[in-house]
Picture (cartoon, rainbow, N blue to C red):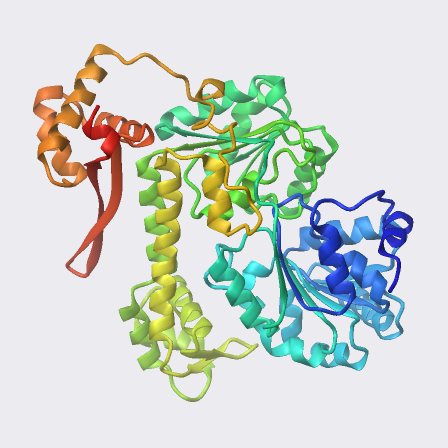
Length: 557
């Protein structure tokens, strides 16, 4: 065996392994498949880079984002290693030169985008000189149970067998047990060793604050006015909010917005300025962050409810990677959920629409536009539905974009996927409304096999006196009377809907619905009221609502 410690010192200029890295590196260097699920900042990249060098030959790395790929290649090249990449941002002559270097054995690492595997002739080129190791980065993208599914990643399952006997290491920061099982299955590595480690972040204080959308910009401005809260990343739900909040913060200190609607050169300038310290805050959509290696981020703020706990955990993981105390602040309200439900209905259409498209598709490939005309729906909506059919085998799409009918077995898995997306929204809603230790809930969600199970002692639930946004205000007499009315009503009502409960107390309290929801959420976080989701179907639509009931603590309050 190669001396891994010596390789670590001499080639990577590191004096020691981080927690959990060594056991992964030894397994992969020995030729065993591995699934590595460790949080952002835990050093997953070394878990394929070091074993790759130890095994000799070229390590093939499949990576989903150009920015992530460029960052990794630049760092390896700075270490004197032969690393190259092929993606859509490079011209053909550069790609051809990289292919020649690969075939001639001159590369330690070759990074490719997953869609490259659909380019005619490229998979065959890889088999002419098989890699020593295959690394699949951001491996959760292969699973439709994950929070960031990428259809192109589904190509990997059919391509990897041709690259054997190279071991495969799949790496991700966010994979629930269900996603972990799907990744292993899709990549054809049933005997893979699983390293599910290190999800507890002892230096990260999580704080959740219920706040109306109109108040959030000012709350962020006040929070980040303190230099100790910077550098900071602020995640905004929309490009418009990213621009407006970025401009507001820039009035007080160097800050900028970042989102996919900006020109690429401008995004690169903003990202480089933030990494170099010229900008102290970035207000971004979720287009920003993957692969960003800035260790001293003190604060991550979300100005709206994220779509899933997986995405939320990955984003807050960008704070405090230097081990120093840091904070994650989530600003949300019940209205945020409605926004997510709108996007889910757009991105995951009703099964009836997929049935119409499936019935319209012919056996012979034809342009997608022609099928959309016959189905008589907006082409953007058609594309969303067609993508889901393709993912689940109900449609075939050629590289040129021609479509034809696939198998009829798509219905059940698509129904499961739609249900899973709704369940993800339920999970993040319960997390925001919950009154248990924030970090412990995140750790349990990801199934960390070695966690202590202890409360974190730094989040807003464990240490409410240390909150920086949520102030512990004295109840007004009016609020105290309203709270008493809500608790008294729940003593006599059997799990009423939130609407029924509001109508019951409205006359006595004068509370409007917004004020009522705020107090109901506070009672939930205090552990006095339990809220659960319910739904019914009406005119083909699923109507969702909440029911409330007293907890044992609430019954004695």
